[in-house]
Image (cartoon, rainbow, N blue to C red; front, side, top):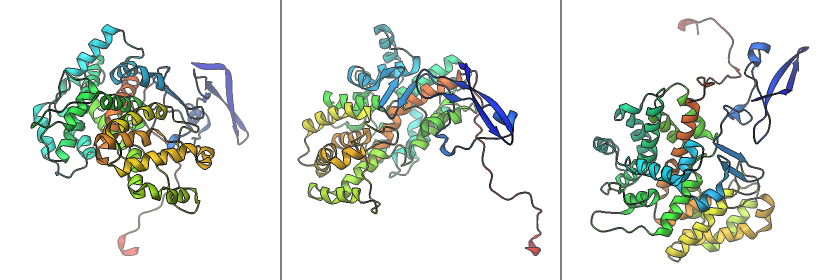
Length: 431
């Protein structure tokens, strides 16, 4: 709601224009510039839209300075410690924590939709055997629109609901199949007797030749990774989903667009970059060398997995995931894995070195998720697909919210044009 008691005044060329303001429930006040061009004939300039609210939302709130992340008002550390992924999915989708009956119904609906159309197996076989799992996921998720025609009408609330459940339910199956295909192993069908995280792990690591038992500590760590990455406000991939959705594109195409954006190393590849850095360091005895390089302003080397663009003091997700990382490493051991030995020592240094403390270079969620996924046995090529699996519910929630918003318009950013002004065509013989 606009706070009519407050306005902002823009003055230039001897004219002044009054702009209404919005007061959010949390966060800074917002100046409404929707009518600015019509009234004043000017645009605003904001590369990356880092100072522009593209929508109003009730899903997720972040205060980076204070290290706060709320989903529907609930702190992320409480959700990750006391809840589980599918309950958080329900919260993001519907706005409230479910009752026991609501949660049971939701879990049943998701569980009963985990299988994919059998003909979709042929899509996987069309990729080269060494295709990156993210390339496979972009293609297969986009192709879902060719198989599920009864949930493509974005103007039908029931079809939106069906599409939402299908995407959340089938993404673990698609991600696991992409992984299995990349390593030449047979696909493993989902099991309805396992919970969401355990089912994903089973589809990734079981083989027909022997029984695979999912360790509950590992399953809990995976569930926390999914929960902590479920949504993160209007980031690049979420904004991509919203922009694609604004054209009325079907939900599967919109989520495929989000996966493609997440694939970028500046967005979803941070935990993969962290593990690649640990490989570059190699052994514990080389850590002091790389610490000195990180402190050298003239050295391009950067410590990946430390600090955060949004969170300036601490990453609230990292505190919870550190506990799971410690549990998984204690369970699986780090003695035979040099990368994990380097990770533990680097964590110790970062938490105690005055330079890291002063610069607020704290271990972030990418650091802990990376070492957990490495310890479990995932190759780095699967780190971003796991992120995509986690973030699907956030994308779907944001998509549903946008479609239902009566203020929705097709996205159409403006530009600051710096090209040539009008000029006449010159015949080729005269150039």
